[in-house]
Length: 114
Image (cartoon, rainbow, N blue to C red; front, side):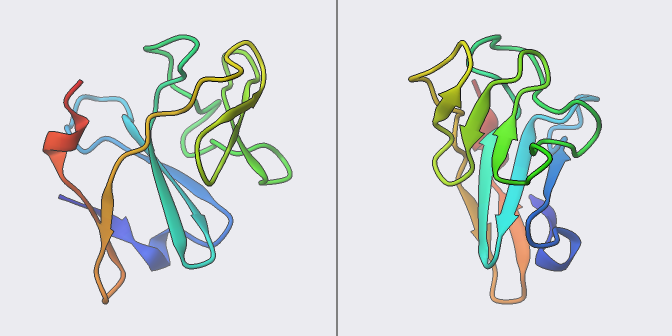
């Protein structure tokens, strides 16, 4: 299932997606240069809590970490590891994506099953 294109996800930005059409974003993408990281939009501290403080707003002000709006935990973009907050030692759930040579970003909906 296509989420977006690289052109729709500017370098240094994040974006949420609802690929299962459930009415709430369940996947977040962060782009750093040519690398795109995909995670389940779910804080490991509060399992069903969405991460963004507003739509597509997953990064701290400096754009250096993913932040959980519910309690301010900071996560490394490259590996999802919590580096600050009550879930130290936990990680965001990484999701496999495919980026085509044309820049289309796909996810397998089966990878979203709990």
